[in-house]
Length: 164
Image (cartoon, rainbow, N blue to C red; front, side, top):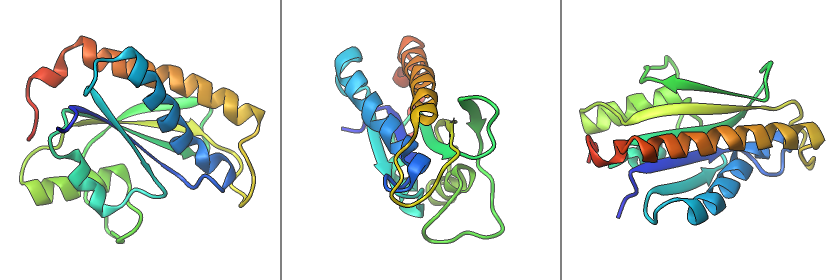
């Protein structure tokens, strides 16, 4: 059975702060297992956001994308994302907007509501681990992600309008 909520993070765990997306997904999955009704949320992570992930959106009501990002002034930033056709689509790295457009093109319907949680990243060297500042930023992002989950469950949004 497909959970109505999906958290999908990406990044390379061997490239410093690029690991923050998968680290948040792992921590959130552990939290959700203890704090939310069973079957409420699926948590996935991968190295990159790929065209195949459009199929992971089928049957979802809300999706939270999670990735590390350069240039943020704050520890994390949440924003709504809408489908948008990109001029250049590759087979192995998409933006969340382009992925939603792939969903629309494939499914011929509106995608689920999607938000992006960007976590401030500063270091991307191969073999590095996230430093103390990155871990502190990750903790703040985890708080935002937990709020997102509880809001979605409290609104009961997952009981209406599922796009399956």
